Length: 114
Image (cartoon, rainbow, N blue to C red; front, side, top):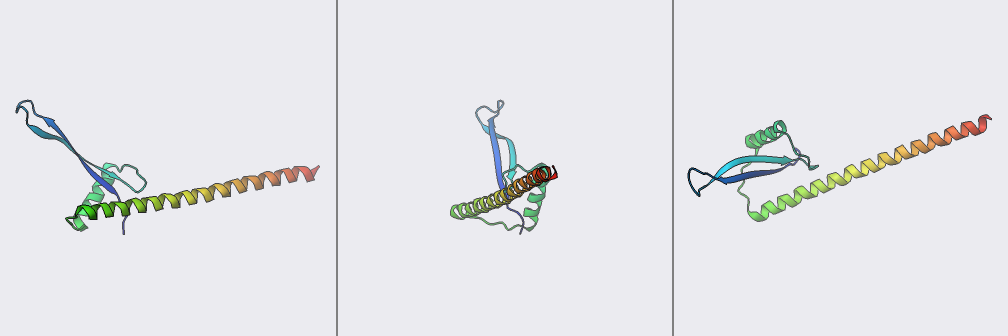
C-alpha cells in the first residue's frame, strides 16, 4: 500500500467586467500534502494524480465516510510523527551517551597518564 496524501482542490472565483455581475472561475489549483504535512511539488503531485486516475476506484463517498477516512489519515499521520519522535529521541540519547563516554575516557587518560 502506498503512502497516503491529503489533496485539496482550490477554486478562485471572480467577476468578469465585460459581463457585468456574473461570477466566473478565475483559477483552479490542487494542493497535496504528504504524511508529514509538507507540500508536494508538481512532479510528485502529478505522479500521485496519474496513479490515482489509472488504478484508483471512483467512489461516491457519503459525508460520513469521508470524515471517517480523514480521521484514519490523521491517525496514520499522528502515529508516523510519534514513531519519528521516538527514533529521534533514541538517537539523541545515543549521541549524549557517546559524548559522555568520550569525555570520561579523555579525563581518565589525562588523570592516569600523569
